[in-house]
Image 1 (cartoon, rainbow, N blue to C red):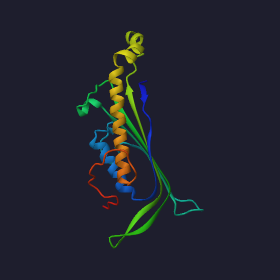
Image 2: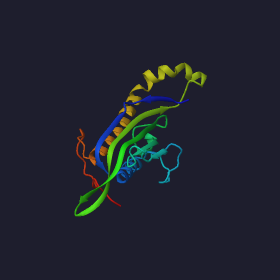
Image 3: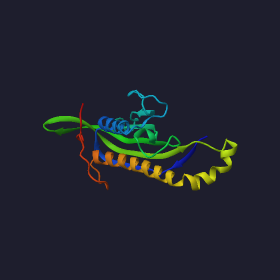
Image 4: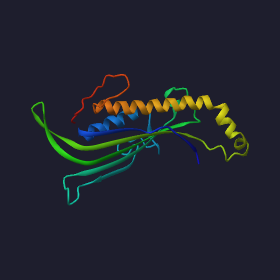
Length: 197
């Protein structure tokens, strides 16, 4: 069993009008551009990263409300991006989408009626580093604690910082897309908030 080093979870909560499909695509595109791939190694756009997609239509009390849950599990080898990493580490970012009380509404935009969603959107970004389990090898088992606390401590801290920066940039990109307040420098965005395809 590999050892997992958890990094603080980041989140985005949004209670306003949004369009789910372009947001979904923008986040997936960011992950692919930053070399985060499916945990199983499947890179096809249809199934990449997604282990759960649950869509529930309304109940008898509220027939128009919908609920959506999506779980993405991604992995990145730090060495693949030319970073100061090694094959010893694997970066993971788990993203859990939860949309509740969602219903479709129409708005006027540039003189046209557009269909958008209204509801509560919550995106949890859970980064962690996976390292191999060295406790099964008798010689390494003896040195495992010493190696993690002394020998590779600095490298491990640098990798934790790199992964946290990735998660923070992802959170900032989502907030910028949703026009929420962020605490990172502004970057030029090549898409509009309500991008319709």
